[in-house]
Structures are given as structure tokens and as C-alpha cells.
Length: 413
Image 1 (cartoon, helix red, strand yellow):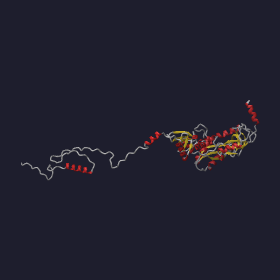
Image 2 (cartoon, helix red, strand yellow):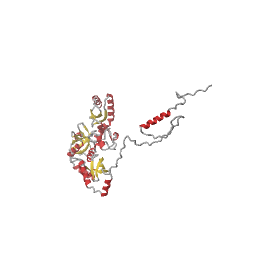
Image 3 (spheres, helix red, strand yellow):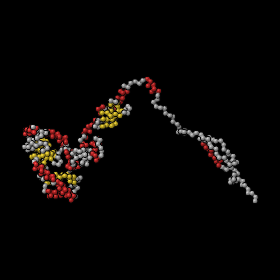
Image 4 (spheres, one colour):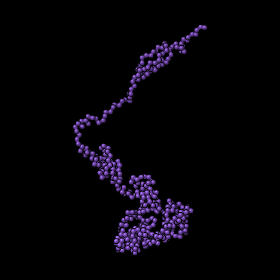
């Protein structure tokens, strides 16, 4: 029943005048005129003639009110999409024509041409090594009918490949085209799946490959490990650029750090912010309390407004009781400081100690061990002690061994 209704609707539709399709390994987009006889649907294989030659293409949509699947768009919508996707950098053209809907023979012929690619790539790489060219072969594209071969290569500097093109044309008897690609375009040609599990954006739908800066990773607070934020091309992943504008808009709504804000709980200072949750960590002046407040509940204040708020709060404060005022008046604000001691006065004066009695002197000496004297601190007492020590060490007159004394006489034999 549904099939009959769909068939009736399909028969009432008119063939589209223009068809939007994509073609080539680079997934180029073109709006081409149709012959007006067939009514293809989205995803149909078409044989088109472009600036490169005759090749297979895939239908995306139509730019008129009629199409085989009722999913056409207006030309204005298509131009808006191109402008939003890159503008002049978007790979779009309207030079060409849709020849016919691809037949089974066309698809089989293209499959046979693609089966020859491994041998062609192997031969070309051997020829590059033989000619000692500083270039790397990435991919080879063969157009329908074998009229042209497109060789995609990478090179850091200019390469003179005239001899290479001459020998390739002699070997394959067709037109040779060399096209240099960068690292991101190389990933578009040969990459498959990314670490997220999805097909590579550059190969699936991304047409304009713009550079991505490390600033985007820092703002989004992603890991700064290059191995985790780099794609198959070795550059920063393109998906970091998708939310860059959103993060910029959200970041502009947040207050800056160390800015003064007014909340329902009073004045405070912003010490940290979160972009996605739109929260700000505020340290309040009273109590040094930290609270995460939404941005909607914050009001940034300048110095004049802050002084005005403090004055109003002071005026609205309830009066202090009399007993509290008397206690505050009687209690000094600061404890009294201790009086500083003079530098000449010792910090810990030594207590006087009793002098120990010295050893008794030899017999006949007039010095005897007197009573212990108190050790003084003046220079006079030090001189007295030094004289007393010299007298103790001196030998008394008449002691044996002293010169000038009377020597004992030897007994008569």
C-alpha cells in the first residue's frame, strides 16, 4: 500500500534542473545542471563532467522544489551553508554538467580501475627512489575511463618532478597530474577512524581545514599532552575548534579573578571560575568563607560603589549596648609593649660565685689561703686577681735551687 503511494508521488514529481553532488577523493562539492530527464534520489551515483574530466559523483540534494526523495533545498539555503562553512575557501563550483545516472557498467569499470592502484603506487614509489626525489607518495586517483591519473604527494620544499611525470606518462599512456597536499589533507585521503570511534571529520564532512591553536585546548581545559590532543595528521584535532566560539562567549560572561563582586551574602573577591558551569568561587570579607556562586547572582562593583555599600552597611548596623561599649573602652586595643632594655645591660646577669680555695703554699711563704672573694665585674678586681696569682707562682727566698741563696755545705769527710 505504501509502495503504491510512494510510486504515485514519484511519478508526479518533475525532474530537477540542478543537482548538488560531491566527487573525487577530496570530496569536492559542485552544483551541476541536469539533463532534465532523470529523477535521481539522494545518494545516487551519477556520471558527471567536471574541470578534471568525466568521473563518478554522488548526489547530495537538489536546489529546486522537486527531487526524488523530497529533500531538496533552496539555493539561498545552500549559499548560506557555504558561507557558514568557510566562504571562499569552501571547495564549491558550478562548472560542469550531470550526464546521466551511473549504470552497473560504470560502477564495475571504476572498481576495475581502483584495483590497479596498488601496482601503480608500488611502481611510482620505486621510480621516486630511483630519481632520488624528496617527496612522498600518498594516494593515486584514477578517473572514469582512465583519461587521467592524479598523484597526491607530500613535500617540504619544491620538487622538480618533470622527469617523473615523463616516465609515468610513457608507462601508463594517459595524462598525469601531480597535486601536493599538506598533513591535514593527507589524513583526509588515507585516514579512517579517530580515537573517539567516529570517522575522521576531515574525511567525513569537514571541507575547510583551518589551523587549530593551543589556546583552544587551554581554554577548554583539555589535557596538554600532544599525544592525546593530536589527530591522525599529527596536528591538533579539528574538534577543538568546534566549541571554541561557545567557550569564548561563556568566558566573557564570567568576572575576572581578583575582582570585587557583590552577592546576596555581602562583598567578596573572585578567586576562581568555571566556564561550562558558569560558577565563580568567591571569598567573602566577613568570616573568610568560600562559596561557589552562579554568575547571575554576582554584580561587579568598583571602588566607589564598594565604599558606598560599606557606608550603608555601617549606617544600618544596630546600636551597640552600653555594657559592650564600656568594656571596649576599658580594654585597650593593643597590649602594652614591654620596655626595651639597654644594650649594655646583660640579658641574663650571672650570679656571684664563691671562689674556691687554692692549694697551700710551701712552708715559709707569707701567703695563706684567705677567705673566698666575690668575683667582681670591674677592671680593678681583675688586676687584683692577676697579682695574687703571680705571687702564688713565685718561689719563696731560701728555697733550694734559687740563685743568690745560701747553699748547704757538704759534710767534712
